[in-house]
Image (cartoon, helix red, strand yellow):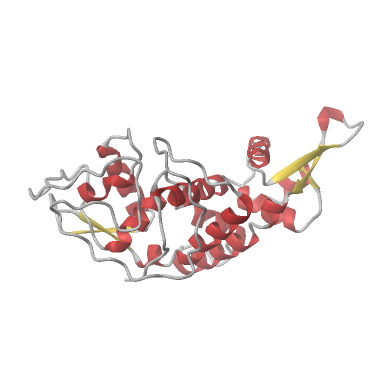
Length: 271
């Protein structure tokens, strides 16, 4: 099985996830693409170029500014504080991530032939927006697993049961597939999820240049710099269920509880 990214850690997964969630907001990738074609643009000019504009662009612009993707410059002597929008170096550098997301979307998304490249990019990132999705995908690179074997990707303090909604969302988004049957469901990566390597690599490169890795809550370990994902390694064999810990290469801020040898009993409504 192809390894999407290595080496890995919970800190790296959290940073990648935060970036994906930030860029997955509606009109974010479209706005950045528009701004790369112009040195500066007003909000009204920007909204004219956005698909399905519904009048809520200002909030998205503010969030992009908070996240360091754009800056705004007030235009003197204009009514209602008009401003122009400029890309920051970090905003310009999202171009490589945009291309990687477009390539993945063109291969795996069933959109109309008229779909724009920005729509492909936004729909790709939309499928990776869920909290902890990156860590779960990386964990499942080791092969199919029961939910009870992968709940360790969740941060400390979150109930084990929170893994079930995340698994369902990723199944609906085409990233995971279910195998087995009722009370014995396992989850594995789809071919689409295994093709995410270029997207994760582009995020990693952007993070190294433009973001500071955050500390994972509850750990005193020094935060590692995000590592490149360009040298895949062989996936380590999944350990037996008894005494199994998290996948090799993933570190967690809390102890991973060993899985007992008792056969997991999962209700159909949760799997």
